[in-house]
Every structure is written in structure tokens, then in C-alpha cells.
Image (cartoon, rainbow, N blue to C red; front, side, top):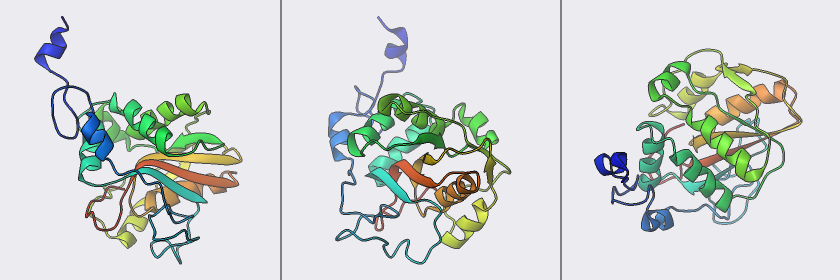
Length: 226
């Protein structure tokens, strides 16, 4: 008998029901973002558009951003369990959800680097683990192309303009970037973090940068992260 399983029985990260780490009902309840979408930032739209109201007029260094699921309350519980409660195995589940929902890209995977202090507190690097899981499932190389140049405040709760200022200059190149790069992160909210990371990669040699996240904030849910 698994003593750890007896003392700490596994529960669903979303509804806390005993059993699987994500029960079938909660998994089926996650809102997949299949389209139509904004071609640039991946926001759900009434019909396909090149640029939506959310990203129109903004200078975005990435060519496209795509997420597997909407960042609603269920997704927020899943992400919180993975990032803050230390349930590292959920990174593989998150990678599987992404692969089931999004088409396989071409290029080299990298990830938004974690703040060293937060990484020590959590004991792991969520975006790095997600990128590693995607690298296996998509059979793509993954490289640590970025590093933090300074500590930033958490993005949660900041207005869009403050988010951009907060992450401006927060990343530097760790090594020259290949021609096509896919930046992996956990949640896309306004795109400020993704755009800052993509800008550094473009300056470092990348001709095309794409963004892939597990979840994406969608207007009306009232939740945010990055």
C-alpha cells in the first residue's frame, strides 16, 4: 500500500474530489480556445480577424500568441495548484492539454524565465517545466534563451500601462536566438510579458517569435496573472 497516498490522498486540483489530479468532469469543463481567434494575439473573436480591439495599435514583437484554454475560475484553480501549491506533476498535464488543443509549431522552444526569488520559494519553475513537457510531446528542442535582468513586481492587479513598464527591460538574452522561437508561459493576460520577452529574442537574432501558453485571460472572466 502507498503510505503517502493514504496520508495525502490525491485530489482534483479544481474541485478537490478524491481521485485523479484533474477529474474527467473538470477536464471536460475547461474551455478550449478553438476559434475563431485574432490571428495576432489569439483572443476569441466573433469571426477571424488579423488584429482585434485588444491588440490593435500595439507594437507586439511576437508574430502570434495561442493558448489552449480560457483563464476562468477552473483554470485559475488548476494554475494555482501547479504554481503556488507545488503540484509539479500538473506541468505534464498542462502540456498534454496544450498539445491536444494547439497544432504543433515549428521552431525552438524557450520559456519566460522565472524571478529567482519566486523560483526558490516555489521550488520549481512552472514555465520551464511546461516547456520541457511540450518539448517531449512535440519532439522539439528547448533552450533557455532568456534570463531575468532584474526583479519585477507581480503583474497581477496592475493596469495594462503599468504592466508594460513593469516588464520593460526585465529580460536579456542568455544566448543567440535561432531563426524561429516559441516562447512558453503559463498564462497570457495582456501580452506585456510575452511582448517584452519576444522583443529581446528578436534583437538576439530571431526572425519570428510565437507565444504558447496553457491559458489566456478572456474578457468577462475578471481574472488575471501575467
